[in-house]
Amino acid sequence: MSRARAEIIEDTRARLIASARLAFATQGYANTSMDDFTARAGLTRGALYHHFGDKKGLLAAVVAQLDSEMDAHLQRLSDEASDPWSGFCERCRAYLRMAQDAEIQRIVLQDAPAVLGDTGSQQHCVESLRQRLDALMHSGVIPQAPSAALAQLINGSLVNTALWIARDAHPGERLEEGLQSLELLLRGLKQ
Image (cartoon, rainbow, N blue to C red; front, side, top):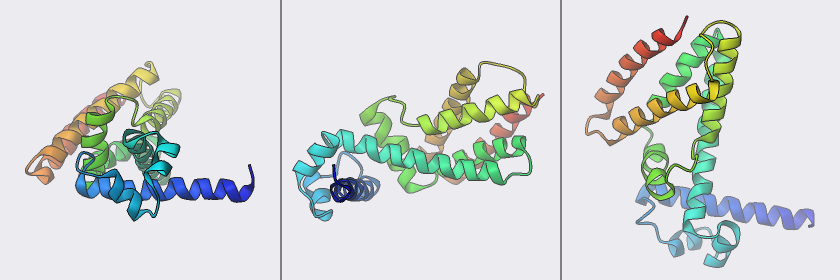
């Protein structure tokens, strides 16, 4: 494949994802018409079907992009922290704070689980979390445990709490309660 063709394909994918991301965030998955967001991207339904199979496949691509962005943000926070434990704790707090972001609420926390089910929509975050836990165990900050299981447990707790925050009529209050409770759990994890 020529370089120009590869660039066209990547541009088409990027335009479809950007248009769908905006539509899913503002209207929700169920209320989004494929014709509307493909037209807004200056493309056809055929391009959508070719690159993603269907609307559900496009949602999966949007969720993967958001997951990757969320993980990059969390990684920056971890890297900027004064020590690995502080970075890990801030990462967990930041995840709960992200539940207040309208795009994350709608796409990642509401539509993705309803449409895609539990298909590993947050695998970047879970794998990054597992790696952090391995490092903390290796350095003796936390006790040894199966890191993959612990990452799933912590991520599941954070996701469920984020859902609780996002769906509440008073998300700011729920966030504060979630952060207070998180501190208790984090103190229990550290040796």
